[in-house]
Length: 196
Image 1 (spheres, rainbow, N blue to C red):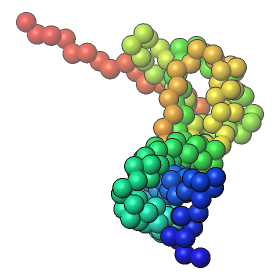
Image 2: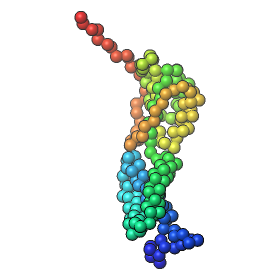
Image 3: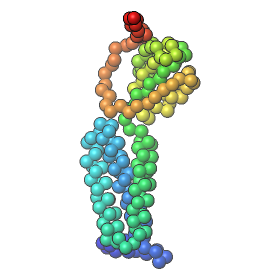
Image 4: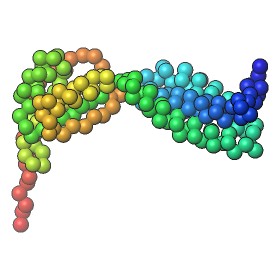
């Protein structure tokens, strides 16, 4: 049985071609989304494998649309599969939680209890005293696996519920140990006096 025969199969008088095109587009776009994400996370070795499957599935789907341009349902199935594929690809990547992130915490509240807890749980961090717009702040940098992010955010919220934090993807993390830094004071920048 060839592809054309499969595409012409009917269930209750309706051809299954649009449904198969829709599923194929979800598949190839999801794989394409994953391919781009693994590239951005520094896992380039996976990209060619994912690209092979992405293009193979895409060719099968687009050939059915091109061969049946007189059927607008196929075109709609193709477009709808593309839209859903983006969502499915991001959903899969989010569940896989690949890579590492940098969690940057900025707080005006004393972070001693949080820092003690991070030390107790052997969670690596760098802590810096700094000055912000509204005065003295403390900044804590933590590089961790994405799978651990929610757990660490819960810890932060438990010890410092009003902390400002941001999360960034980290392309590569090299094993090794940074020098132990418990506190570094960063003075406010000096503002030169204006001459008259």
